[in-house]
Image (tube, rainbow over all chains, first blue to last red; front, side, top):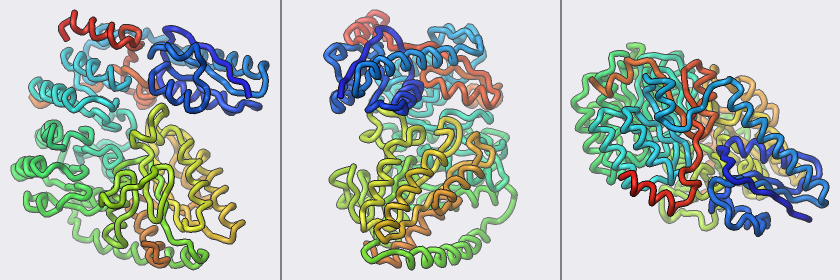
Length: 523
Length: 57
C-alpha cells in the first residue's frame, strides 16, 4: 500500500469542513484511507498512528493544511489529492457563496454589525480564551463552544464578564437559545415562558425538546459549561443566569440543570433560589434533591420529569398528576421488556450504552445504579467501576463518546458517527451483549442524517447476532423536536426500519433497558 | 439593566470558528457575520507569546 500527500502553507479550514472532505475521499473506490487535516501536533500524532505522517509533514504548523491518501497505486493517490483540492475549493466557495464579506477580526465584524450582541467562539482551545476576552472587551456576550481552556482563564473571563454585565457561556458550552436564536447544538423550540440555566449541554437539549414537544416554549436557555458549578469557578455564570431569568419579564418558570455542583456552590445556588419569586424546577443529576427542595424548588429525579413539571407550571397546571402518568407508562415498558428478554439467548445479559451526550450517559448510569447497581464507564459514578480500557466494554458498560479521550483529532460524535458505528458492531459480536442503548441528538450543528448513518450498523448488528442464534435489542432515544432540521419523524422511521426500538426520551429508553437487564440478571 | 439588555435587544452574532454555527443562524433567520479566522502568528506558539507580550495581553 502506498502513501502520498501534500501540504499547503497558510490554508486554514475548520475541522467540520475538513471532516466532510475527508469523508468524501474515503468513500472513493479503491481508497484504503485518506484524510485532510490542519498540521497541529494532535493531528500529526493521529497521522503517525495510522502510518500516514510523511517526513515532509513533521515540521508542519497549525496553519498548514495536510492532504494525504493511502491506496494501491500511484494513479489512485494522485486522484485522491486532486479530488481533495477540488472539494476544498468547493467548500471555500460555499463559504463565500452568499457574497458576504468576511472580516478578518472581531473589530472588522463589528464594522458590519455594530449592534451585534453575542460572539460565538469555536476555534482551538489554545486560541479561544484570548478571542473570547477580545470579544468581552468589545462589549459582546460570549458563547464559548471551545474546550481545552484552562480553569484560570475561565475564571478570568467569567469574573470580567460578571463585572461588565456580560454572559460568558462556556468553555465547553455546547448549546444555548438566546432570544429564540439557536446557538451551536440547539434544537428548534418555540418561544415561551420557561427559562433554563444549564451547566450541562445535553441536559439543556433534552429538557428543551421535552418542553417543545409538549407544546410549551422557551424564553431563554443559558448554558454555562459544566465546570461553572465546580469549586474553582463557584457558579459565577450559573448564578448570573438565574438572576437574569428572575428579572426577565418573558420568563415565568425557571429550570436549573446540572451535574452535581460542588457542595459550596450548591449552597450558594440554593441561597439564590430561596430569594426568587418565580417557581423553580431543579434537576441536579446525581445531586442531593433535598437541598433544592429545602430552598423552595421542585427537584426532579430525571430530565424528563423536570421537563414535564416545568411544562405543567408554565401552563398554570399542577404537576401532581405527572407521577401517575409516568407510572402507567412504566407498566407498558415493563411488558415490552419482558417480550424482548424472552427472545434472548442464554448468556446475553448486559447493557452496552454508546452515547454522544454526556449528561444522558450520566442519567442512564444513575438509573442503573438505583435499580440494578453501578455500571462500568470511563467516567463512572462509582470509582471502582472505571473501565480499564475505554475501547473495550465489560459487563454493563456505558461510554460517552463525546469525552475528550475519544474526540482528539475528530469532530464530536453528534456530527461524526464513525466511532459509534464501529462500536455498535463490536458490541453485537460479544455474546454477552443483550441491549445496545444509543442516544440520537438532533438539532442544529448535529449530523443531518442520523437515521441513515445508524441504520446500516444497526442492521448489521441485528443480523450478525441473529446468525449466531442471538437477539439483540437496540434501544434508541431521540433528543429532538418535530421542528428540528433533521425531520424527527423520518429519523424515527429509519431507526425503526433498521430494527431499533425508539423511545421518546433517554429516561424512557434507560427504563426499558433497566427492565430488560433486570430480567436477564446482568449485574 | 440586567446583562446590558441582552434579552431586550435584537439578536445579532459574530461567529469565529465552525462555519456550521453561522449556517444554523442563517437558516433560522438571525443575522450572523463570519470572521475569516486563522491561528495568529501562523500558529507559532513562540511568536504568539511575543506578540501578546508586546500588545500587553
